[in-house]
Length: 323
Image (cartoon, rainbow, N blue to C red):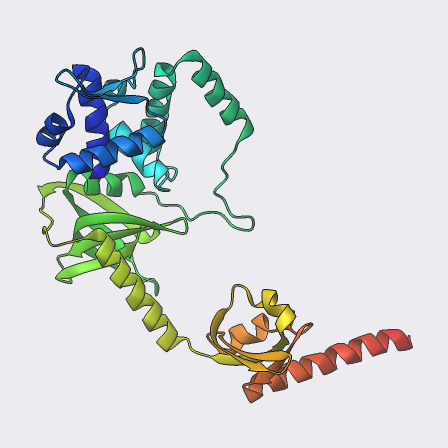
């Protein structure tokens, strides 16, 4: 992973004082070009690396500067990396402690002015991941799942399906994915005989086994998840397809934000927009906020529902006016 190479470059340069790009490339089994690209990335992130030419030249840290990465444990560095990638500790005590320890060690190693900046930032910026009207689902076995993925350990897990049915499965965890605050585990399931995706909050029991496993070199978590997402979207669209045609003025395009637009046709100064509202019940709820600036053209049963709703409102307001 490139993260490991970036950290290794810093450790090597800090421990040896100065190293040539060719020496770093040989030590890290990569190309000189890749080393120079990594050096650029580190420099852009604020690490003061100096490159000098000549027989005694090489890459070194600016005199007096130290990153002190050697004080961090491997899993602390990994937790920093995961948090930076948008995969926070998720409430798991062990992961939270690793992150806290790593941040404390890094803060202590920084020059005094930077420490003051960190304290100021912590007092003035707050990240709240909780949504307004609900809470993030609890994932009680997240730390066990993380450990299994990181250390290549098999799991015996009890999993609850959407319909409430539970089953016992022996899993080979291949990777963890976070999608919109929810955790998913990609794992080879011995029972199914293939790699499947499991929603982490649905695990009702998890036991970490001593058995280990090997992931095929051909497996790519990124490729697997991309394909899984595509299949999910296609299946959902096939199962939940309810096109609604809306007539609205071109100036009112902003009201269509957040809708799954399938087609748009011009009609003079107006436009006909076809959106997928998944099913009749969902459409009845979704069209009501649009009625101020739009006309529901079809399907007929939805247009009839809107007409009856308008008549009902008209009756209510006229009744109040009469009294």
